[in-house]
Length: 289
Image (cartoon, rainbow, N blue to C red; front, side, top):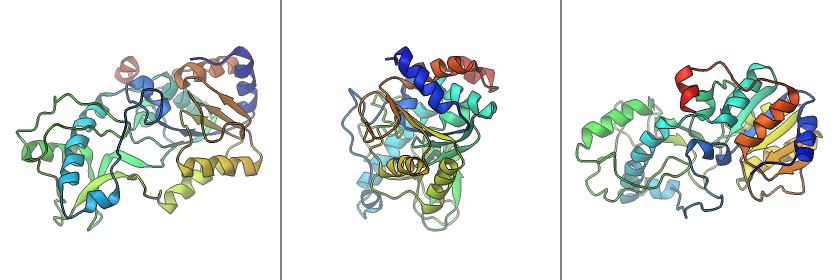
């Protein structure tokens, strides 16, 4: 789905007056093979909550870690699409003040973006809830494999936008623990119903405050933190353009809403500006995208 020429002209005009703050959601990663929570045809999801994860009965925790391990391997194989690459090129050219992403897939960084605020955390890091030690997810994944030789990483399941999958059997699954203090560990992501940490939201707000316009790409703005950032931009009086397939909570309240795909629309806007869409990232990543 692409926007019409008149809307593309207006988007290029609204966004072309200075540096951009960019807020991205799951819709920017769908063309990399990661599904959207709320898009058309999205599976019904029951996201993990903190209370379920911390419950004394560890059944939910085992299911979450088993599904997350399946999802992590699928996530790690995904590559940036053209939408990610265009945003990285704009950063290189000085057009992007920063990217605020609601995604935990790390694809902006793979594409070459460096000014990224991961609003909901990252699946690439694991943190201990007792001592605060952090671990690289790859190291935790290696420990999971060693502790669960029976676990089938090739099991067929449906991938979610948070990297979670639903495995068939988790009764024997051994969850990882902190190798420093033996405490409970979790992926460093914001669980459903949790608040975004205040310092992280402050970083996101600073990106919006430093920008001359806000571009929302691939988000339905269902989550309140995204709405707050849009409202912050509106209070500043800077243009706000939303690109998203389907409705958003801010339809009719922003300067322009394009009901279109991100990876098709961003290159079209770049073409209006006469800018490159090929940032300097690793060739293997470029070919894989």
